[in-house]
Length: 75
Ligand SMILES: [Zn+2]
Image 1 (cartoon, helix red, strand yellow):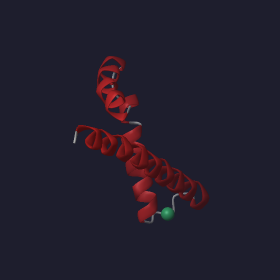
Image 2: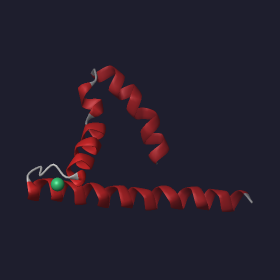
Image 3: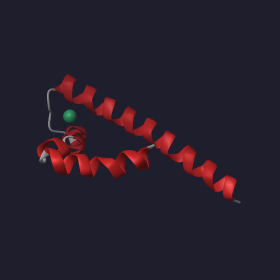
Image 4: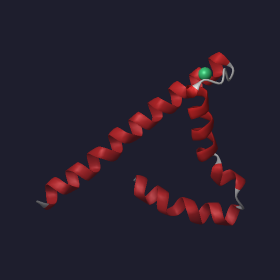
């Protein structure tokens, strides 16, 4: 049973990261092309962008500590 669980856990993050990348690229393209038309896609882009840039708004010390666990979980 253990190998099956490991395989499932390895497959999901890879697929999800692809989806996340595609979604963000799609939203970035939309926001660039439509110059923030204000639709739901634009609002999604702003929410994702704010979340991704969140660490840069924090003091350097706390952002390094906050990124450590996230990087380990992503890898
Ligand atoms: Zn839009």
